[in-house]
Length: 245
Image 1 (cartoon, helix red, strand yellow):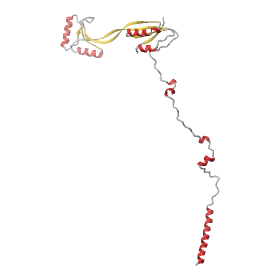
Image 2: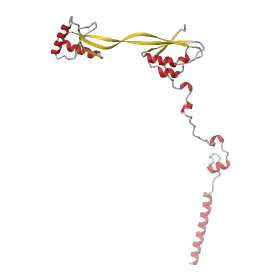
Image 3: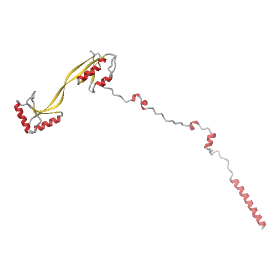
Image 4: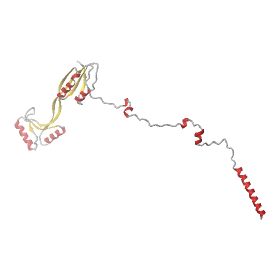
């Protein structure tokens, strides 16, 4: 029994020794092949390898400074400014102008006084003009006042109340049926009177008025300030160049 135990123990020792010798042969690491690329840790790259500056150079970004809008605009792109109606400019020679038309004489006199220290001479001219202001609806004059009143009674019987007998002028003894600012209203009223059996006439009425023009002479080196034109001139006032006499 003792011999059997020693025999088994010897067999186990031999088997363990054989296993150990086999595992050392299999775990041997082969020589590194030169064809396989070397793996480097990132930490090792920073310590042993000098990386080109252009690759790892730190790009420093700063917010761009924005210039104020009024300073960044280029001069040739600024919005155009519409010039005033009358531009005051100095000159090395005498200049003469005509200004108008003025509808009110008082306005012309005020402007003339405002520019007196800047001109050699100033004078104004006037001209009569006419403009259509109303439309007159009327019946032609009768030969006598009696006949005119009789015609008026006929209108009254037709329920026409707005009329009167014209007492003077080229239409004396005629019957006025009204003045209208709008042409359509005048002709509409005339049509309603015609429907009652009368023969009304529609005639435009013209109003006369006077316009004024100012002639003035500015000597060399003088200039009328722009504020005078802006203060005293209306939009419809024009300035025309003229020869100095």
